[in-house]
Amino acid sequence: MARFINPFTDVGFKRIFGQAIHKELLIDFLNDLLVGEKRITDITFLDKELLPDFSGDRGVIYDIYCTNEDGEQFIVEMQNREQTFFRERALYYLSQAIARQGERGAEWKFNLKAVYGIFFMNFHLSHSPGKFRTDIVLSDRDTNEVFSDKLRFIFLQLPCFTKEEDECQTDFERWIYVLKNMETFQRLPFKARKSVFEKLEQIVDIASLSKEDRMKYDESIKVYRDHLAVLDFAKQEGLELGMRQGRAEGMAKGIAEGIEQGMVKGIEQGMAKGIEQGKNEGEMNERLKNARRMKTKGYPIDDIADITGLSAEEINSL
Image (tube, rainbow, N blue to C red; front, side):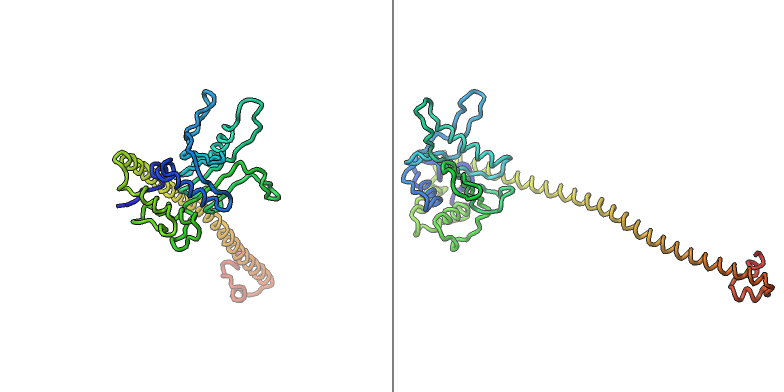
């Protein structure tokens, strides 16, 4: 039985990164994610549900939504399956956070704060190069010079992260290794190197969950596993359908190629047979012509038969 929670479940992910009482975990992760760029000292969790401004519009619900001491906003999402228009969905989410910064009146001068979108993806994103980490910024297409630092997307394709414990070189890689393999551990690695993992181990220990939290987690893990089962079934169905279609197409193609090859071979054989028949008919006509000439000159029938190979009846009929 697993000792630690599964961080890919909704309850597990939010228990790690979505609790104000344990916000030091999210701060540490974001600092390791953005090492060399910025240093966050504090965060404040915001309302995860943004209601629409107008009736009939669509609202937005984030997994985790917070702001740091400089007013910059961070949206952190865990996705276990690819959705149609996944990239567009991410763009919409961040654009909503940008648009919500607008203020009424002429005094506001568009002094926007940066919005970061961090997307954990427990799947391979279609039409992507297969990188673990993909950073998207607004930049000049030719020079790659950053045009604006107010919109930043960071996509983390977890299946593309394949490093083992002793291969992790940065604290960010250690975070990803722990999250990806958490459910298989009996104790968390890297605690001696990084104290935050000592705190993390206490939080993710299933035995530390209250009765209410355990019920929520059990339901969350059931939903997660049902989801995986549905995906596996759909994948298997798609594979079998593809094989059936492939066999049918292969048979049709094979029949077509067989007919084509048969026609080619038939033509070749027909031509060969025609040539042979024509040759035989030509030889026969030549023998008949010679026999007729010899008969006209009075050669004996037996001599004509010996020379031309024709029968006496064939010669007499000439």
